[in-house]
Length: 177
Figure 1 (cartoon, rainbow, N blue to C red):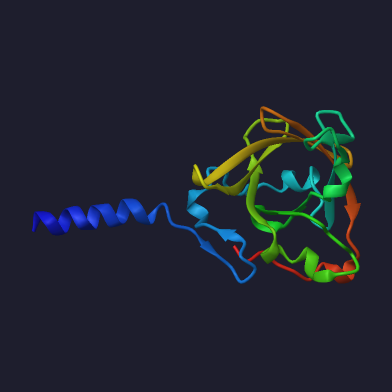
Figure 2: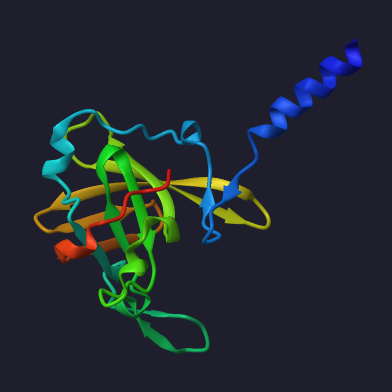
């Protein structure tokens, strides 16, 4: 009997470490693992626009980054962007092309949640990441909003995102989490 209890306990502990992938091989985890809970307040929608895409245009105040070997690459070339959805969902995309609607499918994006911090200024975004050394983990970033610009601070880097409206015909997707 003791052996069965130990096996059951080990299974329960290990099951919290598991994740899955969707049809596009994007990492998905249960929502209960996020520490950021979706805000029930409508005030967060005065800070963000769920009908827009926010493109990363600067990192630490720089327009370009050194990607090794002395080669500078423009930040905008990566086309890193954030798309906010209702109910506290956010997706991070790379290489968005408005000519290809599937590039805005949240099933292809990096899974995340957003919510207010209970304080007056800003809100938090938490997204899922993975590395061979650490496995699956969550990254939590603070976001402040000033007009059509979002400033994301993760403690090490500061990112600036500029709002760009999405054509209405491309607002057809809903997150798969």
